[in-house]
Length: 217
Image 1 (spheres, helix red, strand yellow):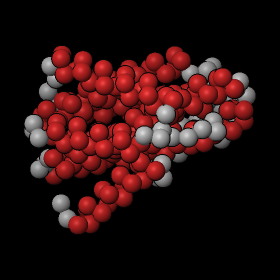
Image 2 (cartoon, helix red, strand yellow):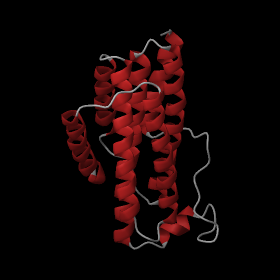
Image 3 (spheres, helix red, strand yellow):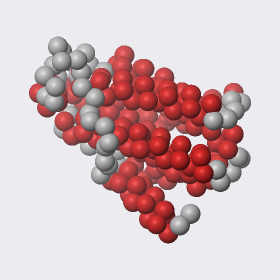
Image 4 (tube, helix red, strand yellow):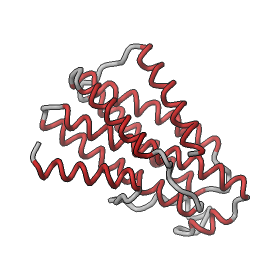
């Protein structure tokens, strides 16, 4: 990896942790018949204080997930020697950066903030990704596929839990879920292997700790 590459990755990591992220795709919008496109603030204002706080907690959790995704993809790019996989991880990371920007904007519209522990989440995900990468591309890809599957299920639960009136957040979560499913399939098609059940269970347990903490902090 060149010095320019290291600077680029450092910049991406810093932006991930501080919430200054760029998006290549526009914010997903709810159906035009349901709400006027771009009226995110009005949509948030229609929620009760309790609904707004709950939606903000869920979007903060999703934002943390995207911070971790940036770290995991960075770790995989560092770990693999395959130019093709490096390019694939870079493309996926760019899509995940869209998610990072979308969730950040929703938090602002809901008059809330990202997690105070983002540097900790980022560092932990980077370390885990590097550890998985040391086991080889097949295991690393399998780890990524399982992570994306768990995120997809997690987003399903958010769609069930989000306030009915928060159509803006729902549109964001639905697009994120669609993208995560594509990433999981791509990881397996690239040669990923299924992880053992104990590893998948440990990943779910760690995810629960993170989501419950990030909801409030």
